[in-house]
Image (tube, rainbow, N blue to C red; front, side):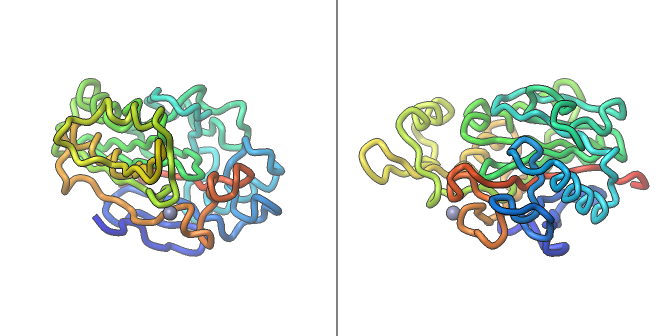
Length: 271
Ligand SMILES: [Zn+2]
């Protein structure tokens, strides 16, 4: 329930709960990008110098012992498409945005030696691990992906297509914007309400007429519970990407001109 992420070094936070899995989140520190992207920007699509981004990604690849040729990256579009990937996808989007898996915000695999990578600047990374079937996955959930229930859809997919037993799945909610930093309007809250029963705890609070603080981590936890996970199967980071300006880029705080952190998850070759 508390902080599931610990510092590996200035650039990498690793998830402590998931055994046999390399999983975590990058910080904004220890890279070569300049200006708005100082310094460990991992986003190839944000008009940073691509050579700097690739250099940054190589540093992370070295830290994790997963070369860029083993990375699988997606063209994220704030929707709910989830793609199962394989060795045939290795290297897609790793050094060129154009080769990313198209129109996809969730990736999973059962193959070892692949690193699933998605980019963020406030949106919620949610990691999945089935220790029985040896499946790893990750989704990118901003408010749109969250209300499209991309988190619940990963669970459904694993149950239906991979024969996952619900009790073998663990989920980890990563660093992302907190409710104090994230105010939304009625339009968003109306879509949140579609997922909630009257008796459910509200993941938002009205702060002024038509303006609400929204806790996306809490809402995603609620959606994972509705998908069948138990509280003890869901871990969460308390870190906020906007509050912690020393650690993270934040799209809201930096008014759109900023870099991206990346989530990563992969099964080690030897496990
Ligand atoms: Zn915050």
